[in-house]
Amino acid sequence: MMPALPFSLRLAIVLVAPFLAAVPLHAQERPNLVLFLVDDMGWCDTSVVFPPEPGPRHRLLRTPAMERLAREGLVFTQGYASSPVCSPTRTAILTGRNPARTGITNWIPGRGNHGPEDHRLLVSPWRRDGLGPGDRTLPRLLRELGYQTAHVGKAHFAREGTPGADPRLLGFDHVVAGNHLGGPGSHLPPYGAGGRHAVPDLEEHAEAGRFLTDALTEEALDLVRGMEAEGRPWFLELSHYALHAPIEADPARIEAWKGKLGSPALDAYASMIQGVDDSLGRLLDLLDELGAAERTLVVFTSDNGGLTAHSGPPTSNAPLRSGKGSWAEGGIRVPWIVRWTGVVSAGRRTDVPVISEDLFPTLLRAAGASVSAPWFRDLDGVDLGPVLRGAESLERPLPLVWHYPHYWGWPALRRADPAIAPFSALRLGDWKIVWLYEEERALLFDLAADLGETRDLAAERPELRDRLLRALHDRLAPLRVQTPRSRENGLNLGLPRVRGE
Image (cartoon, rainbow, N blue to C red; front, side, top):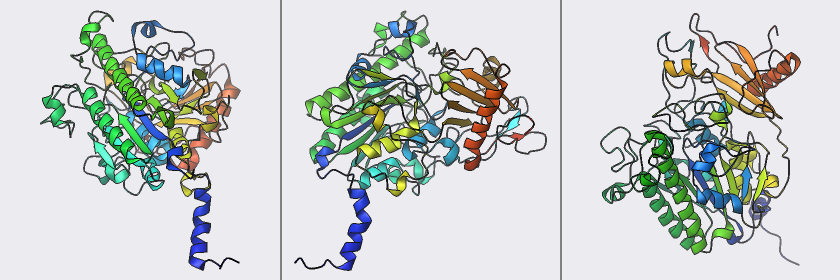
């Protein structure tokens, strides 16, 4: 008979068993994880067709690496960002929690309230500092599961001067060129050196004359080689500053685009897209070279919809309405592609709606984390594993929600585009309800029939409007979200609500 184990050892086994149950015995059975995150990339900024029918931009742009990823993986035709601006989406990815829950509802640090001619409403206090060392983050939890973790490029998880501005304090072992910055001083070398928006860590690449996208790619590839040599699974977030303003022509690629798209801004933007696609292609080629492709899960997506208001404008999200900073689909619908060889059937497409915070539980489960682990509590995201494995639907306990009680852009822009305004929104089935805080009224759209959100059905379908308004209220109320305040009396306007209730 085997002697009894000491009580302390038996207790330890009981405590860790639920976590070990779902973790493969051999590290090599767990996939490496790549999050390839593009800044401000719109739904149609690629030759991969996400809409039901290809549009002019799909025919003009050439993104062969994205096409390869789509052929070898799963295209999500209804992929969403958690917010129409960057920091809320980026922090949602790291926490699995919607911005309405974290309180990080605007780009960090945002702007204060301006004069009456600018903001009709006052913005309530929100979590402007962003994430901190006490937050439960994806890289920290992956590291606890034995993963190496690396971040290259834009971070923008926290305010300048706070601990969370250093991604190392959020769980990343290796960090290059990421801090509090939301955008670069320039994509051209020396990347804004000497100014407030100088990108750090890239002096050697600046001396070599590399465009910022290429500099980040070189750093990411070097990290992959080093982590792969360690023999342990790894997680890389390659987060490009492109396609964020300033829109600047990539000298190595602009000649192929001059005069092709109708304006210098559009041509320059296309050269930046090509740089991002080349970066993806080089990463995929390296995984092949290292024999790591079949054991690496790759996610390609963007942090918000395409920029349609600056520098040109540089892009169009048609057939979607509007773009970055807006409540419209153009502000929140983004490219989503996942490749996981042996799990995801190649060349699939799915219409299942997904959102940024889904990446947290999806990647943790892929890494072997148990659903009984404490970090799966209080999540808004859901594990996309069933869809990756072929399911045509997904059980989602909470409907998709967006909460942006802020002003984005400048007054003339908001006058020209009424979709840029403080709002909350919810999607349920094919229906989308939008609450406009300035007007304290709802808009209702049928996305299946009206992808461009050209026809507000709120007056025609009052019963449905009110049912969805109650669902939006009930989704936000437990989160104790902040709402805009009246400029006259300073009081909160309150949550979306049915008139008279």
